[in-house]
Length: 443
Image 1 (cartoon, rainbow, N blue to C red):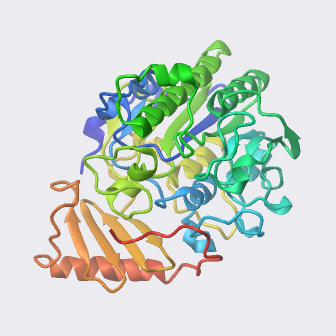
Image 2: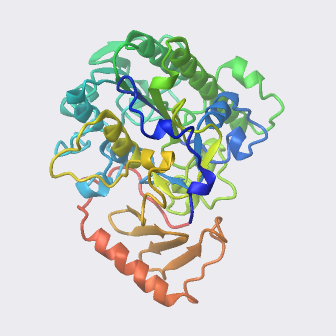
């Protein structure tokens, strides 16, 4: 496909003139956000003016994917730029049992440090709670948030049956427990805005990993009041949580503007996986399924990027991209090399966005869950899905983005070709380092 027709650079000079200083990178990650639940994706019952504005000021990736259909593995891929199955991070680590992102991998903040960057994680870690897995031990200079897979939203909220034990541990600043001051989404947004103001003079990498709108379904009364017309209680709570997330993003972007950093900061926004409709009443329609699935609803999530003065406002990029590309793009922007003997699977997107390169960043994208019980591959518009003990499925995503019409039987040579490529990729991967608590299930 020709992606250059839908993306135009701001100016010819923007493609060649180096920035006056090394740019900042801000990655904003939502948690379990439905792909259909943003204003710019057509949502009618949840206004998201700040995220819509961010999209309008930058580029929307029309075919953006995460490297896994649930939480922790996606984060491992995002912070390494590598398929997380290469190092066994294929499941969510259980809390308190010593599981975490293998120390053989060097994370993005550690790679940025020699290039003069200060790095901070604000929010959800979910890559291991043992001391040697702590964000401060993996390259982050500053950490404010929680180590597990989720957390209560309100200070001193009594336990709920739908929340795990780690949801009630204190927040930590670096390695010290600290009291939670307000509703979690507002707390994290405030901390991010303060970090931006404090570090405005030097290049920084800020990873703002919200837990919203992940369960438990908790929202402030003033946000619930915005959605009194939504009769479904779970959907009303979800809408309120997304609205608080949108306000939080707005506050963080305002801090960039007030500190004169709009032109010096590349901003990414994405979700870690598709929305889990039953758990939080999110929607991925018209995409099939959601969190935990290798169909489009589980792995194709909203992703936008903004770099004022460099990326043309309102642009659309049609070729498939991956959350793995964020690390590769950030390293290239910072002039920092990847780790030795750890080649990146992600691709630097900026040459494609400026027009310096044409075509698609990826020839194909791969997925694996369950230690090999489920696979998927996308090549051009072809999507191959393999479930253990089932016949292969093939979809033409250009004609059938909802994956309703399996055309494998009428395209057997294509199926064999794609399957061989998938098997070759699979042969490069490690076995899952632990089983964890989450696994994809065939619908």
